[in-house]
Amino acid sequence: SARLPVRPRVHIVLGSGLSPLANGVKDPTMIPFEGIPGMPPTTVASHAGRFVAGTLEGVPVLVQAGRYHLYEGHSADTVAAPVRLGRAVGARVLVVTNAAGGIGSGLGPGSLVLIRDHLNLQGASPLTGPVRLGEERFPDMTEAYDPELRREARSVAEALSLELGEGVYAGLPGPSFETPAEIEMLARFGADLVGMSTVPEVIAARAAGSRCLGVSLVSNLAAGRSLRPLSHHEVMEVAQEAGARLERLIRGVLGRLAEAG
Ligand code: HPA
Image (cartoon, rainbow, N blue to C red; front, side):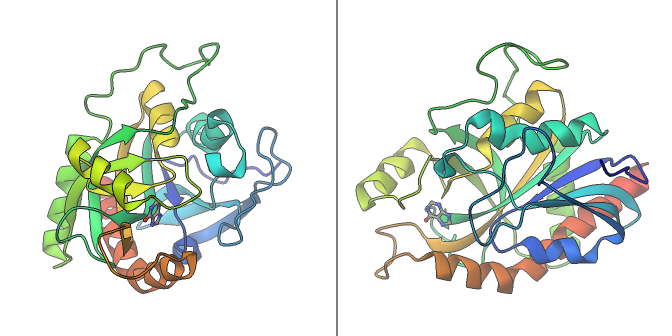
């Protein structure tokens, strides 16, 4: 088992196509998922499946490239396993990123969107079953996406002249993309973004009292919001282009955390 040189403060989960952000980690220690108990191999080609521990902007971080999804057949418990591990090695802040479909007006491909809240429509929770050590049975989810971290992110975005939207993320099980009727339903539910991840990780983090910051990168307009059919390829392409902006935003937020001590 790999020893971490420093105790990470922040756990950063990189979504589809965003793995290159792990390359910027200083003094990296690579820890593949493979061999970690409770962490089976991942099956999505674009999700490598490893941790990179080191520092970003002077902050000790645990960067996670690749994640588990319910649609791979994993339980919500497995999906949340990396977050629980991050917490166990010291991270009290979780930064989750994902690629998402844009529902709300103005959320076109390439948009960066701060997650204000979520809808758990995945039919599963990582908290089902016995209460895990250090977790609450009934965690409050009122401020699942930490208001203070959101304020910092908005402030960083403004300072860097990065456009940053804000919205509600609907987490669905997938793996088929939604029908236009489902997207219309989600819009009426108050969702601005739709994706197939993030919700189990944030629930597990909140149960342990960690603070969460979520950022979606809109890879495509949701079904029925554009004339083009959806493709995983499109998701990857947009992620690469916009990943650089997301990296600047995350680095900026980490810089603020470093200043705050
Ligand atoms: N729907 C669900 N998940 C997604 C989408 C989408 O349109 N784009 C990227 N992940």
